[in-house]
Length: 250
Image (cartoon, rainbow, N blue to C red; front, side):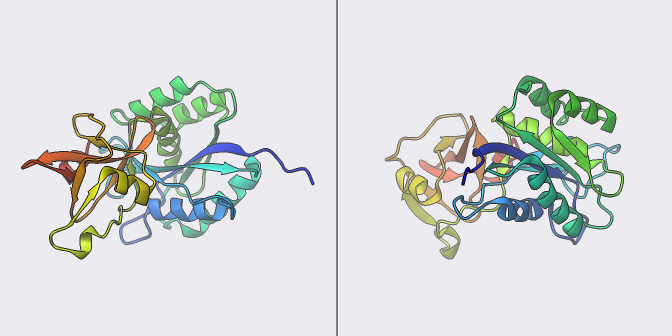
């Protein structure tokens, strides 16, 4: 039996939730789980902050959720699974959008990155999003309400490609919340236990494997220089996990 080649995809959704309903990040994780086969781990979902403006409808923060998929499935199969779950799980008052990019295709990545960065600081229209998607060969579709989520979905693809944007959904569990004191671990131990690529300071310094980290409360990972990374800062001579104010930049 001849298997189809393994291909790489970026999938992004936006505007699926409402106050008191399941979040877009959770829905993205569920889609990722449905699309992953038994040979692949569920990919990490990254959250990408978009422009907050009175002319842009959003639930609480206006963020898109993106993940990378390695799959032998074809575009229509991937889209069918994603759309079915979007329609089933999105809030009635939401305006869901779905964007799927074949990373093995020929496309203008710079144009997509520029669109993503623009969506962080300007109001963009649906026609602009559809025009670029058609030009680049991105599958872009709306699945309820006004369909305004297609803008954020396309922008999320660009921001993930940019490689310098996004927080990983969820928290990194290293046992730090079980103790009021937190935990102390080496960089090497953290990377081994989490699968993250590096530990980096808020100034951009990559920490050596032997450095000791003091981790407390909520530990969040970011997407930085195309790697999943733990962000830390120096406090009273210790390396500590980044606070909410540090993470806002991502």
